[in-house]
Length: 178
Image (cartoon, rainbow, N blue to C red):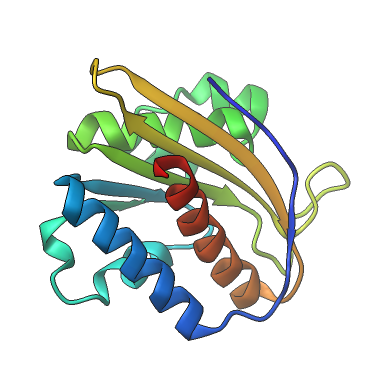
């Protein structure tokens, strides 16, 4: 099942907020005995770095894929080149394929994907700078995968867009497992 709802986030990110979100993810995953993988494009490993800044994260964080190029998305996550060509790398369809690829190839309980345009260039009228697509996959008790996707629009410079995307991804993960 896929859902979509555009969002806009504020430009300032408080490191305490990020740490609080990371701690909440760690607690939730540790208590459940779950594992997590991430597939990142525009954030270039910032999400994985944020998660692994926390001591003990190896108990629940399995791995991160930085698939910045389309070729990497295909090689590492089995995203179809035809899908990328048809929908564009920055699309919910590709975010969905990325998150499923990350989850299946790593054997984790849950996964997150991020693909977007951090800027300052690369945007178009349809997909301006700050457009970021997300995917969350969660294995259900019957071993099926529940996938949700959304697109958010962030404002600010490149670093701000990337940071907002990480916070948004973690909030989305916590909402999906609540």
